[in-house]
Length: 315
Length: 259
Image 1 (tube, rainbow over the protein chains, first blue to last red):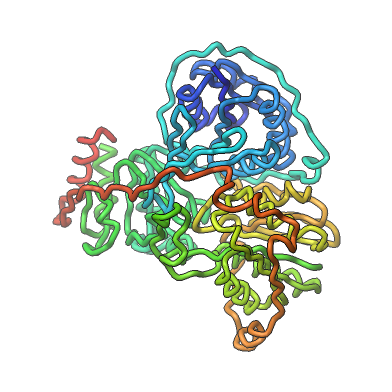
Image 2 (image 1 turned 180 degrees about the vertical axis):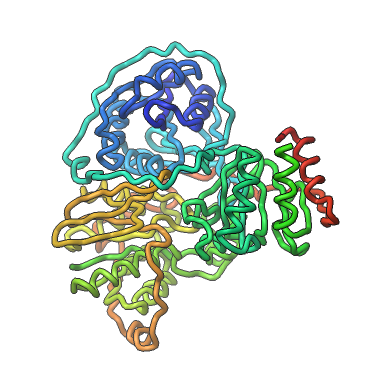
């Protein structure tokens, strides 16, 4: 069975859920091989093996983080040439999409982004135009290079052979042309990562202020163990940081549960969340289009409903 | 400082978009065509750089005949000239082919900076800037929320999930910018009038040395086999809050095993 290369996203060896999801997806196409590089990569091997990796390509070289995406691209190009994998699966993140794009050029292959499923024959399912249209597409030249959205498949605990193969991370002149000199983290909230979260609590124009996010949206999110999202109206008004914007020009999320509060549901916003499995809506305006997506909706004032809900959930 | 901003004409991002039933490509007639709104941030950033440091901004776009309107719109924001690459053979080109065409058209023009919006609002792939950087072997300075040009040194804030990375490179380089890096300006009346007469160079594939067999729908390296509208969601339960709204949501969440 051909290998399927899975690019692992991790932080100091702590594997992000999306990478485990990709291993489960890879098992449906061929034999999953994880590619994990960067500081702490060693620590990731056990979790990757436990979730089905038959081979784990490992490099602890931190150079991957110091030069924008290129060392990973060069390593993958080398592995594609040596192993002729059935596909390369990459998380649909900022880095992941750029790795996919450059790899496609490097190995003369087609690329598909934001797949939510990949069949055994490599046919990828994509939700395009904000989830309004479902597309089946296939790479028809070279090695299929496919980025996959988080939350597309459940991780599976099924131990693989986990054969460790140490690799040397190439650092080319092209890679050295960009250098990361500093990493700046915005204040850590302790909440789950927005793109990966299984529950997202989101606020829009109806929240009314940054204070509203702090006093109404965040407490509900914390009671549910959820990530916080915001509509463009809320981030444009400066009530919540831009990196939490869900929508056409922000993040696309597909959680198990999306709670939309004070969000009217313009296409700009729906495009980022309408593939959520279950949607709960709180909005004062009974005519708001967001109610079309609701599994459960309450027409009411979020400033009274949400604090009460938070209180109930906290018992 | 000479900067080329690559822009894409897309369906209005506030409108519903469709694929064409005949060949599964974007139905460009289904919605009003506008400049990809994320590209406007790249144009604004380029204008601010040349206003501070001198130089010219050129707009480049690949697209059907109507895309020239978007080139003129971009020029009316204050850019100096435009390049429009149009060829019937380009219809249905994928990102791999698009990056080839842009790279070939950019080659040898000696721009100090080549700028893009971080993604188009229709295809949303975010791969073309990285692909063009790879093809031209230029530093890839993408997803910038801040750009600083100092002589031949370039520094950006690259947006990440945790915040941003400070990344440095030399010029020339390829930059993509994210929304919120600036506030794109509205065209002035004077610039709108000037844009009508601004020079726009028209290029065909043969002008840039790309063979028609390398681009277009038939040779795209990824192909759509079928598509369908998402099935309409069955209507959910909506209740008016009469003091018990919160309790009813809690009940629903419990029944669905979220709590």
